[in-house]
Image 1 (cartoon, rainbow, N blue to C red):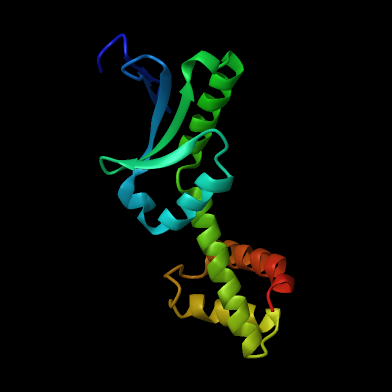
Image 2 (image 1 turned 180 degrees about the vertical axis):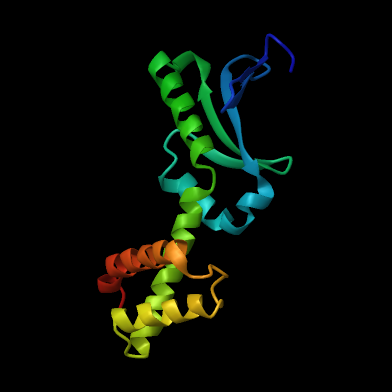
Length: 167
């Protein structure tokens, strides 16, 4: 860092780099989010998020890190705009790749529903199949019990939520 053109703000949860352009007309805020390896499987979704979900911030890759980035012309940047950008970057940091993982999981659940419906299985029959897979250890070793019940209940909630939406 090279003050007065660059600053770093660090808290326990968040690190923010603040950079000014060489002519001091543009401000850039950067927040490291996750290592690129954690984001690798979600790059398509991350680019789509840049288009319609990140508002004033963007995702960027640099030095094997996924960053949250905000650029703005300094002359027109307001205090409210700056606060909003910092809040957005903090949210991106807190979420990490979770929203992208959740979309991937939902897509896979939809594929399971589609396959079940192609085999003319009901939701209950699909739940029995999943229960069998867990009991046999094909979906991970949960050794029955309360944890397996919780996992199967989570499956039921997702299947019930998505079942009517899938043809």
